[in-house]
Image (tube, rainbow, N blue to C red):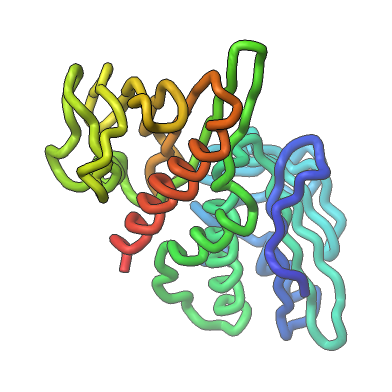
Amino acid sequence: MTDTELLTDRDRPAVKVERRYDHPIDRVWRAVTEQEHLAQWFPFGADLELRAGGKADFGEGGTGEVLEADPPRFLAFTWGDDKLEFTLAEDGDGTLFTLVHGFDDKPGAASFAAGWELCMGALAEVLADRKPGEAGRGVARHEELASRFGLDRPQVTTTADGWTASFERQLTCPAQAAWDLFFGGPGAAPGPGEEFRAPQATAVLLGVVVECDEPKSFAFAVAADEPGEEVRLRFGEGTGHGARLFLEVAGTDPAELDAAVEQWGDGAIARVAAEAAKLDA
């Protein structure tokens, strides 16, 4: 059994989660395809018509289509725009179950993976004829996977005019909570025209605010002694774990790029993500 992976060698990102169950393959197949069992471990439950072109109904979670069904070894179906694959293989007197979830939202990969791990833990209970308990949100595991998948790193673009480092980080708290963490507390964000100082080191002037719309967006012109020339922050809708943080820092001096990535990625964003995770403790 391999650890949970982020697959990047497909036409779009996917997460792969694998578990071994001490039950025969036919029993596991029933648990991952029959409505009465899916209702106990699969998000929203599911009613799957096990034939190519069959309907996949996830109740309040929407609909999809069965793409392929090969009992008791393989099932592929869509869920909205996403694709799921279930692969079952005999492993001694047990079964190796592999779930692959393909999607377009790469920054949400850790959230999807952590969620499936919780679901597959619940599946173990279903197979043991026990009622799954409260699974929690898997916040610590989310943060571990976000780091291991490299989701805390920026996308960097360079042109003849300069560079831009763009971060998109899934958080584990709502936008207002993340906003307060970023600025060091409720009501701490400065308004347009005011100085913006580092919340953790107020002697450090980061720049002058040009935009502030709590808890949605914030922008400032970077002070002369700091890396970059403009920073723009935005909080938007993310996965079920919480809000999505978008931060873009731009500059013209190539020598400042690494310092800017360290300051905002390894510094501010990492701090907000870590403190957001603690809110769930």
